Image 1: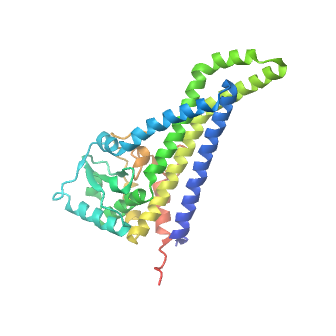
Image 2: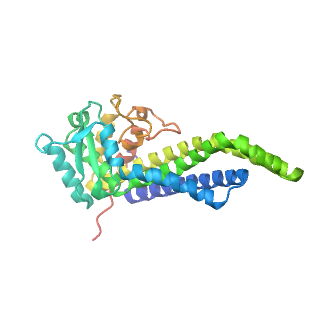
Image 3: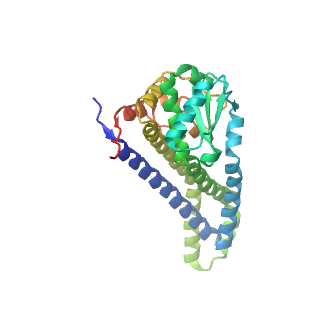
Length: 312
């Protein structure tokens, strides 16, 4: 028998992990900004200008993220008659989660998968593929919908938007350095007075180049780690919503038996789906850049859960 783990403890552990990784990415942003500010001699006005630009850009994407995600994946509204069971399941899970019923969409592909989108519960949507509906029984569909409902209730889309904003700012700073730093930064260093100033400028140049090369890789690592933590959290939270971890565990086990890829997905949208759209989570272990933990590990955790007893 697998070791049993309490649901509340698992949720708390996953939340702590997410906060930890988000703290790391903010520290990385601060380090990149400080290094480049010293290199270029920037004042706070330049920091504010770059921050405002990237925030506005990502907010525009954020407020339109649901329409973009549904459109690029070819999702269409689920017919209430043809997909009556799906509508019923979404409605009952929404009631259990204490949320308004999300809009329901289907994708015309046999690759089994699902995702949720929307910046808040009132604007949320859940989309599933025809392949998933054909593969799963009602209990398994309920588990999948509960997982996606957990993403909505946990504001995971907001979390990943914040990560994207911070990551985008770091990448923007890198591009600015690579395009202008070598030339203009070099001139600034040559104008520094004294040998100490020249040595300090050289050190800052090395630090700036190192950050320019390594920062985007570190952002990708941390973003992937956060995404994997959110998947574990949504599994546990979804099991809590419907008081049943077995439906989702069975659904994930079935997904692990297929390697069909979702051709509409990309690396930028892979984290949205319940399983890797490229079937990379079918492996026994996940690499550091994986958007999803291995399906086998998720199934093991779900099957080891014990639901807490209701309070008297």
